[in-house]
Image (cartoon, rainbow, N blue to C red):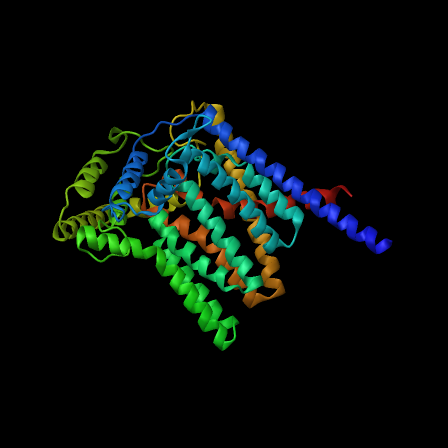
Length: 434
């Protein structure tokens, strides 16, 4: 009887936990839908380009844009195909899809936190923090890639950590696909993906037996290469160039623009919001090149102008880079465009985000310390694997217009460790009051 009673109690406990997760999931989804409905955002600027790209993919099948990558437009196209490009309950199809996707990201954060922290309570805290975070939730109503990118990072870390336990070929294959697809959605992560690929390959070589490791290397590498096929093929068909990313190399334009735009608290909706140097750059760089030679000439011109600006103002360049590494993490606004932002709401948004970052830093430090104490070599690798995206996001975006939304793709990791940090604080006060 005691054994049966124990099994029954354990089953009841699991059922209760499952119901809690589902109820929280539905509440988090409703929260996102309410934000979309209560704070509608204008459809303008970059959103128009993504919509046009998706429409051209629908017409041509294979289409390559000179300075955009296909990842997010493909997502829009797939949603259009599934839902017949319509409305449901007053929501646009992509808004519903992104609300669901971001809520699923919370589930992935929960799963990853459970595997990393080996604690249901810590994982649940991370889950709740992500479900009701206003920052990724505030972007579910706009046609911008941040929500999809956050989902991809959530998936990458969930699959990677799960693979460490299961050693599944399917998992390693899809891990490779997601790692290769991330720069198709947010091109700034191109070098991040390459670095992480080599880190994973190195891990496989060191940790697995000879025959199995070569199979893993093959599946991981093939998966990584698949998302680049469309980009390379499209660039060759449309521009007669073989390139793994956009043929315009928009990163050079961003590098130039970063000399004149110190920070962007909100997304500009008009060219008049930019300095004259930036307006000129957008006109020259993005629209007036129709041959490989013209594109190369334009790239060389803007790279040279950026270097000249650095040479003329080296101190300003260094100071701005350091400041930008902080600005990328600031959040003065929850919504990207129009949300009737009041001074009080700005203060709440800013300091609420600072609390998230503080909790994440505390959680990461305490967790890292525990990992390296138990097994220094293995722990150091795991710390590098989980911490590198945050470091990369900080440094890479110091050479851009530093829009605050650019850090959102790695907020699943920020909030995951924020849950651990909050647990540490709870424990501290509980111990103090005993």
